Length: 394
Image: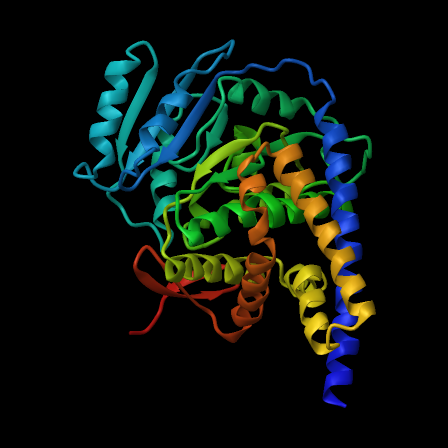
């Protein structure tokens, strides 16, 4: 009886997951069409804020990519460090020497304004920004020479659905991203998850909600007007998912949030498997806390793992084999469509065989994320409640 019940439940969940894959494929197609729309040139002066802590092997190349922009207006780079003894300081000084005509400012951010050290630094960096458009991205983000041009152009996006409760004006632009893996299984699984699972979910949310209502840490480009409307960055110093909060608050203030077609690249460290799991559980609990109902609904998106479990529960019966093959084909098509087609991540072709084990781990982490509210971030343990971090009792 137990086997019959498990087989029936996993069959239903497999079918739900299969239809989610189809929906995500439609979402990817919708975004691909929108990405081909030409937007008018918009090149206001821009301040780029980059909080840094430590120096990863490829971080200097990421810094330098921001100095090679083909952009028709002035822009400045503002780096923020908690201490002038930080290893990144020497790299920033080297950057100034390599690009002497580029305005590059290094700001010391000694005050601890909240539990999120990155946002604490950003709040102290913001007063140094002289322009009315602010771009924030993580220290390891590698960008193309057309990055600023394409991100700023997205501020000219006009929704076809005019609504009386909206300003019909873009207040924040965010960008899709892919991860560059480095050798280890944990690193490969994380990069594969970004390109074939996470971004698929972002595109599906965009289609179902008629637009995007959150931000991604890969790029948060604000108009000063929208940033002022949400009270600046200081109210976010205790939030773990500050990128999500930025987008949600800008949308709540009546501004649109646009997802640019410009894809950036992030560095994925050579995680040991335990480090990969710790990073993923932090991300999972952060997402669970930010989008509670949407996160609970992820149970219907794990089509391939459910089909695999159904295969076992059904004793490899012919219908269960057919369901597994059908789901595998849909999952693979989605991975290639989003990962390779939209994000240009050729690593997906190399690591496609990891889809099933990666998805099984993701489903296990999803279930485990409901078992507690603690996360480990930069060596410190925190309790997460309503999106906010507080120091966990030792």
